[in-house]
Length: 245
Image: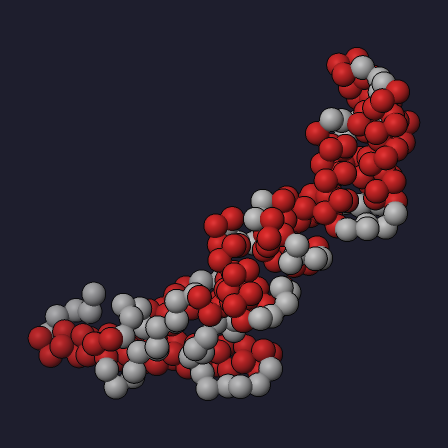
């Protein structure tokens, strides 16, 4: 198996070198400069991201590695995900206005900004600036949370006209028909939602048990109503002297 992998790597390298040619003296010197940036321990994460991007885009890894991912793994011990995180973080800062890019001084902050649309990033940074706060992942999340539209208040039980189109009966009906695996998935999802259908403020395990009990009770209530309807229908048929269907 190892021999096969080695042969595949050798073949891939040969194809890559044939297509792009070996590194020139200038390429080799530039590669050393870029690697020194990374080796120095990330003087800044931006330099590291730019260095990696240039190595990838110009295929400076082609003398020794068939792919950029293999180069990052063997040379730096980084997964593909980690390598792209560094490059994406650098790109986020690069796209910011000059006066704002200097406020993003670490990778964690840049990665938090990367979750936003490019147009939103500047607005969030200006909001943090107006507060006189340092730009941190927590500060970014706080601003984003405040700008999100408020969740609608849960409907009152005293106002059935405002109730959603689904309810205990339909939920219980689904609970009866579905598989135990789906029930487990639903409970795990439900305990992450607010407001909860049960008044429990304890651990998620307790909440999960309470949700399950709530559903099982709903199932019993639904079955009782179904039984009552069936019994009433049978009684009517017997009164009329008709055979049950």
